[in-house]
Amino acid sequence: MSALLTQLSKLRVRLGLDEKRCVHCLSPFSPNTLTYAPPVVTRLLCEECLEDLAPYAGCFCASCGRPVTPNSLGSDGRPQCQPCREDPPPWNAASFYGIYKDALKDLILRLKFNGELAITRLFADFLFHVCQNLPRPDLTLPIPQYPAQTRARGYNQAHEIAGTFAKKCRLSYDANILIRVKPGDPQEKLNAVRRRQNLKEAFHCERSLSGQSVWLIDDVLTTGSTCREATYALRAADAAEVRVIFIGRADS
Ligand SMILES: [Zn+2]
Ligand SMILES: [Zn+2]
View 1 (cartoon, rainbow, N blue to C red):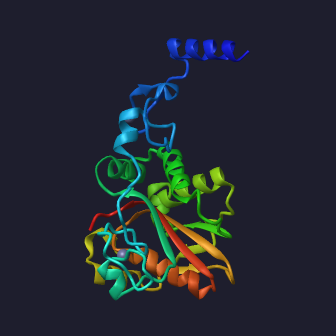
View 2 (view 1 turned 45 degrees about the vertical axis):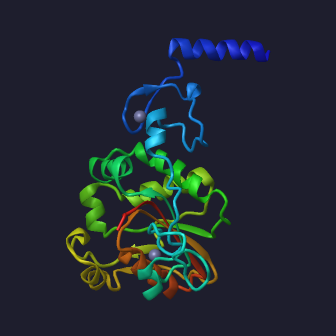
């Protein structure tokens, strides 16, 4: 029986029946013929793109994900960057997949601005890889957008990523608990200090999260000011523990 299945699977490959399109380069490829050596984190990328989009494997700040040298340590002995030592973020831990540049940046921008929602399945695979050994949270939430912005774009990329990921991992998920109550100016144009002022009290929690552990999901972490303000709102609602999880960490 297994010999027959092997023959059938070879035939499928020869006829191109198991061919898929790579989510990044859009070239056809067969997931069953990969010779890629490291653990395959997704079946949605061709071999070349798997290599280009491998997870970040270097040393990083446990508080914010910024790449650091192994001897840059915080008071608890974990790697920590200088800015986090001076001004620790309000969340408990941070996890991310890769550095926000090259192929990963291209995918994040395509999802955010081109409406290529198929990329959310790839990012859900990335987050699964990042979180597979972590204790499960009580609740998973996306960083919300201001409603007018969601209406203008048609979707919130953080919600698309977090929702697909939560479904894949059967996590408790609710995009309506944490809401954004202030629009603010576009963050990209502001420096770090202005970003924080711009975001002050921009988020509100609709119900108590007393004693709950929360995963807060976004696409990119740059200065961290958005996640900071969102975490303050979760803390104000009595969340016991907050882990911020994002796809790309800006390399700065
Ligand atoms: Zn590819
Ligand atoms: Zn840091």
